Image (cartoon, rainbow, N blue to C red; front, side, top):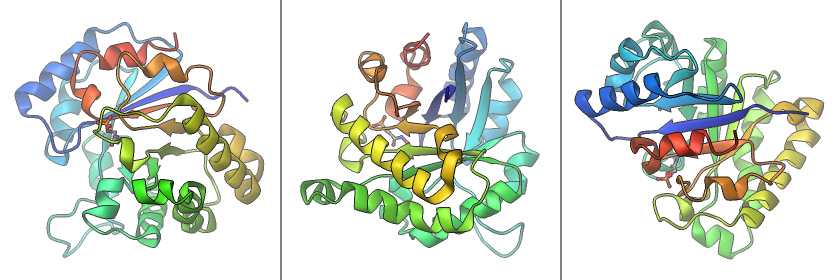
Length: 247
Ligand SMILES: O=C(COP(=O)(O)O)NO
């Protein structure tokens, strides 16, 4: 099955009104290939700002988190309906920085995923192992453990994109090799096929972890790598090179 190339830009806790406006204006002026689906994710405070300045309809906006309640006494949190209200269509959930720093459990990520989908947000669902887990040969076990509560709770995967982000490659400049990444992506696709059937053929599985303008093309021949979730390089002009790396 042909799966549309997907490039996400996770700005994390970076940027200002000025810098995010500059990135958005660069994307507005960019000749983004029809073959690419592009989503940028500024910090929550700047989602509406980015949406206000975005004129390129080939680019959509994601929040970086969403609490699994419609509203209420949840200080500091934001809801899926509020994310939709300010014009974003996607949300990143389960990022390793939230699983390790904020201690979000696999079950809580699944609850957030269900709630986001119920509010018509697309979900970029992040999974990935720690260095020690890779060294112990536990990569696939960790990824399937993280996916398990989501496959048990979600029946329609048409608005979920999975992002495999080996934690040991995030922010290190040392991306996984295409061979290693493809091997894990294939195992993720196999697990999804076993659990959700033929829908799995349509689920985009992104690679994330030190993708940049120079190495993005090296993953082009990997049949189960359908795009990227880019951190640091999404804040730089080379983000466009990544978007064009498969055109
Ligand atoms: O965490 C990442 C990847 O970050 P880097 O590209 O900076 O490794 N994406 O969500």
